[in-house]
Image (tube, rainbow, N blue to C red; front, side, top):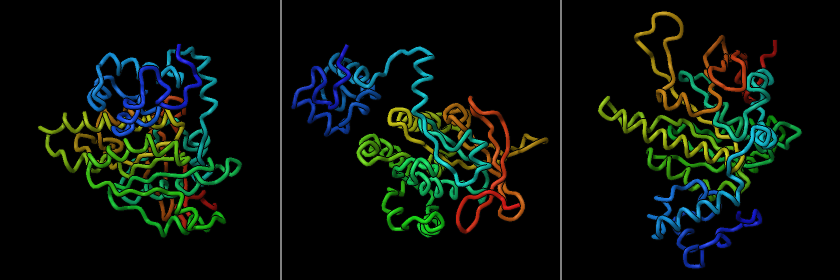
Length: 318
């Protein structure tokens, strides 16, 4: 068994200075990045034998305690899961106390239902101290549709008595130009997240580029495989670094549905199985929005009403 005291990739058995520098150059600069790699990926990227790659990955996983565990051990590990307030007590209660770390939370709905507003609010709230519902950490905002608005961040920060410039300096923003860029950014986060105390990663929206680039049934399988790979990237990031991952998603109308809600989230079955919590948003009267948990293994199905105000996400006043 490899010592749990290993802190750096250069301390891994079989990794000398030359291999360590090659690993860093190839983007495998942390134990976590190595632990989630496949032997084939590592072997190809660094130019080492497959057997050596397998040994290095095994050692990294042991150093990080990634192994078969009992349910009781898992329960104790879940104690490290933290939650970020949405700004609405109603919505927090629906989510079991807020948006969880180590989990992907998906918000989906039609245009104007509040998906981006929730993401912006969480990017501010994650910076609050734990006693105020935050994690005292920074956020990464991957914007695929140009919906990010610094003006909203400014007004949300002011409403909480925070310095807007300081809040904005703690949000790392990137405009992803296509699906490959979107995935490459997430790869970079395996190095950035632990280095910069990042506690929230937002992808708004997760399916936009995939939907635009892979049009027609003939490209459906390719799109789903790539989207599946991307979602697994995000799941690994959430679990390894104990961060909250929040994604938004669009909806499309289903012409074959005659009763009930004819809209469904884009992405098909791949997306249904990936996020830990799936929340549907829809409009109500005025600035009111209704959130409904449609899938979460640990939460009961239910609904909550919240409002979008100048100050951000809040509870209805009446």
